[in-house]
Image 1 (tube, one colour):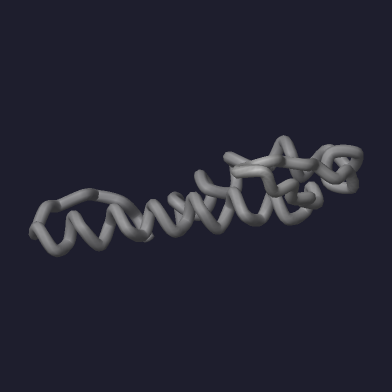
Image 2: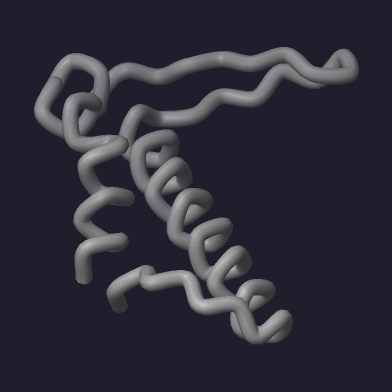
Length: 71
């Protein structure tokens, strides 16, 4: 649970700002422009953080390394 709280804390400031959540953001990459909403960005960051924390825990477990990360 502690790690999920850390993941959420990472995006909490963004979630508390209605103007940022309701805004749209453009990104141009390799000549293609994409538009994202603030909601999409916030939850993408949360999902991305959880994914990488889980991936790290899996690799430590495969190497039989004690990590002390509370679930």
